[in-house]
Amino acid sequence: MKSNIDLKGKCVLVTGAAGFIGANLVLKLLKEVNPIKVVGLDNVNDYYDTSIKDYRLRLIETEAKGDNNWVFVKGSIADKALVDKLFKEYNFDVVVNLAAQAGVRYSIDHPDVYIEANLIGFYNILEACRHSYDNGNKGVEHLVYASSSSVYGSNKKVPYSIEDKVDNPVSLYAATKKSNELLAHAYSKLYNIPSTGLRFFTVYGPAGRPDMAYFGFTNKLIKGETIKIFNFGNCKRDFTFVDDIVEGVKRVMEKAPAKQVGEDGLPIPPYAIYNIGNSNPENLLDFVKILQEELVSAGVLPKDYDFEAHKELVPMQAGDVPVTYADTSSLERDFGFRPNTSLREGLRKFAKWYKEFYLG
Image (cartoon, rainbow, N blue to C red; front, side):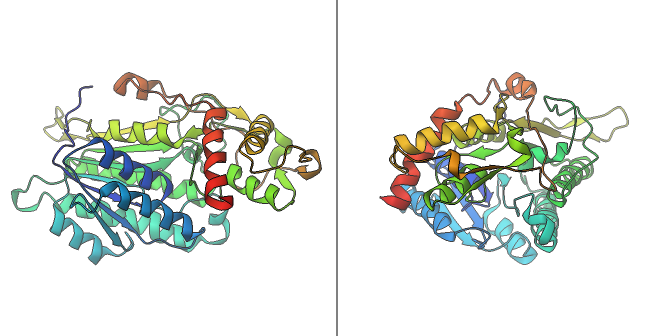
């Protein structure tokens, strides 16, 4: 599949731009594409420590060097009037929707924020893309949006393939992400909007989300607290380093599914789904061991730290799944790319960042 979108000179909307993947994507676009105009939208909510979001935004400001290539708007995709206003003002060529309420466990007690951000917000983005073609305008060339490996639920077959049925979500978060895929398909069919959904697998790295295990473990170990390792350590996760994720997203942005007409004279939906994962699931106990070694190596924890005294093996939690494992063959086939950062290399970068950010 050849690239059919040259990002040079384009105007790109990145929602969730203060988020982990969003900020890293914006940085990559500003570094590697010139000229480009990137508009970032984020409500900078306090689901986790906003100082990390502020830090990411400062990195972007530094990279943008005050040029006209970066605009940040604080607001929510659930605000339809704001979304419509931005689409009218900037005539986006490519839209990357990464704004969402994340987290499986949080969705158990806070369902309303998932409905607002992940369903209403995504609907607003789809509607704005639809109306970008009004009055003969060229409109949005490609909508790329975040889905999640959680859509696979407690699927027994591994690795997870995009061909698998994903009709049995085990959390509201997963249900909203599957809904995004269904809505995008309907809009692709009805309005010929080229869209690609990306199922991300356990993204980690420097300045990541503090609610993720590797970050939470580090925070607890520093305070001398006990870390809980679920499913008695028998969980496996396809940990994917953030640089690999954003490399994949950028490549996907440049290749929109082709618009085609079927035998019935109606559009064949220009719609695609891909997994982005490391295709190499790691056992949670091995992961914790590597994390500990890198935290000691970076000077975050002392060499004589007693890890065994701070570990507790506990049963599975509601909404969690025992294994995530991505089949990335279609990503490799269509984009010549697969994530390849080793867990040790990625955790080393995280540990060094953590030392600088919190203990510098």
